[in-house]
Image 1 (spheres, rainbow, N blue to C red):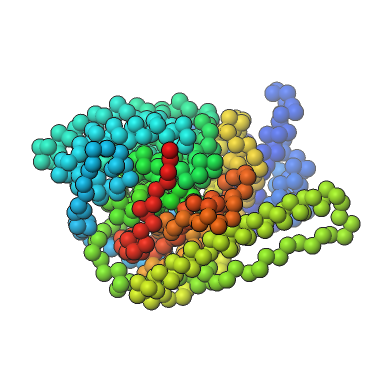
Image 2: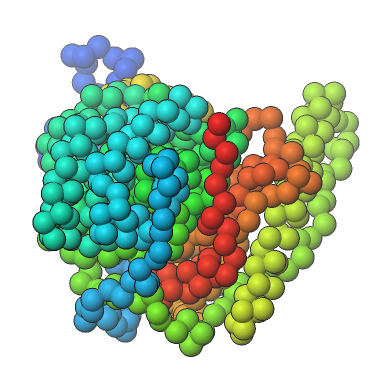
Amino acid sequence: MTLDRRGFLAACSQAGIASALLPGVLYTLAAQAQETKMPSEPFHVTEEMLDHAAALAGVPLSADQKKMMLGALESQRESYDEIRKLKMPNSVAPAFVFDPLPPGAKLDTTKAEPRWSAAPTVTVGANPEEIAFLSVREQAELLRTQKITALALTQMYLARLKRYDPKLRFNVTLTEDRAIAQAKAADAEIAAGKYRGPLHGIPWGAKDLLAVKGYPTTWGAGGFEKQMIDEDATVVQRLDAAGAILVAKLTLGALAMGDHWYGGQTRNPWNPHQGSSGSSAGPASAVAAGCVAFAIGSETLGSISSPSTRCGDTGLRPTFGFVPRTGAMALSWTMDKLGPICRVVEDCAIVLNSIYGPDGQDLSVREAAFNWNADLDWKALRIGYFKSEFDPIPALKLPDPKPNETAEQKKHREERNVARTAAYARRVYDQHYDLAAIDKLKALGVNLIPVELPKLPYGAMTPLLTAEAAAAFDDLTMTGRDKLLTMQGEGDWPNDFRVSRFYPAVEYIQANRARTLAIRELSKVFEQVDVVVTPTNGDQLVATNLTGHPALILPNGLRGADAPQPPKVDDGDNDDIGGPGTPVSLTFLAGHYQDAKLCAFARAYQEATGFHKLHPKLD
């Protein structure tokens, strides 16, 4: 028996059901029940299963309603099997496209030639590694004037990748043969006067969720170590066309979570006892360590922001829909973004200029312009700040002992209080850097306009991310291959995927409707100001990933010797645990597709502070 959508909805309507149950609830319960049966035994959805599913979905059902639903639900369950038989790869997107623009928004589609900063004066000594920490703009000038060769630069970075990987664990695959061939071709073209632009001859690293022909694309995950995808991601193709040289595929936490991958944990160059955060773990670590000139990372919910903060990089998370994701692993089709991790802001602009724009494949990408102008009068921009985020941090209140508390409960409470007290001390310490940034901006003549992040339940919208991720990796859950993933804790993907099967489809839609409200309300803020200054962590990180607004994360100094000591165990949940001598960051936000203005203002702050010139001591 089959039942079409209309028939199923009619059955639910007849039963008086106003909210559909998540199909995965019954499917999972059914699969568990099937395990206890012989393969030849018929299977049926039972009222007991429906009771459990209804309780999880929060839908009260009467006995008559349950009886009326059973036949339709059993047929509906059978339809899931038919869909799964299609064996859809990760690259197949749903038949809908997320658009972050609010009603009435207008895009600037008129493209102009980029206006880079004046050519820098750079000298090179006898040691070629002196240029390892130069910006892309500086290296480009050395290459253009043939003071160095692309081959020498590439060989230097390959050597550093090999030298520091044992300490930092950021390499998945070196693309050495490809890189050497590209470097020789770049030198020949430059010598012949065929200079392609500021990325010509510049070595870079790719987060290993970008497909590259002839090399594994492992997604950092156990079970995918030998996965070969016979295509180059659009971003890889565009960087090839710009003359950039891919030297390595760099680590990411398994399936884009954290910094733990199947080869270990990627480390923070400023404190190798800690992870580099994630999931763009390898790109952030390698850039900070001077092992690539720049890297491409991705962000769904903090995966450029977090490692850029931990490793002291400059990371740009572009507007959703600016950079095509074709050839990149899909985690959440409505939230994934690709962007550059660099040493300075203008490098981010240089890279974005080469990778943005429609490719005819990723339908979320809009025909919007990125018109970089290094000479933009940033003083004419309206600069806001989330005022309440810079207010004094309220005093810490610890829970009192409960009546009749057992010895075990007391021990657990005291341990949590110690951790909370330490986290509070770190938060209070780090706020000094945020406040210093406000003072510096005022000293630069910036008239800061107080604004606030709209009050909405952003965290309650994030289950839509894991629901999409569970669909993207449905096969892992249903076949048990999720056991191959490195991390198997409560907050890791295998458990998240299983939990997401119990997320009602109606609630997924409702979360996206709430997201529409968030887009409209936050977009109103950018009618008042052009750029917003904010601490990197907090609700804005979740909000702006949901709404698709761009963010630029800058290093904002190093913690002093008086900084609170880091915890003994890095659980990967927070970026503020670095301890003495580790970086802090600041974030700048802007309206949709206003990435050029965002970069222009952030560059002015960066050059006024100079924190990007600080580098970790690796030896």
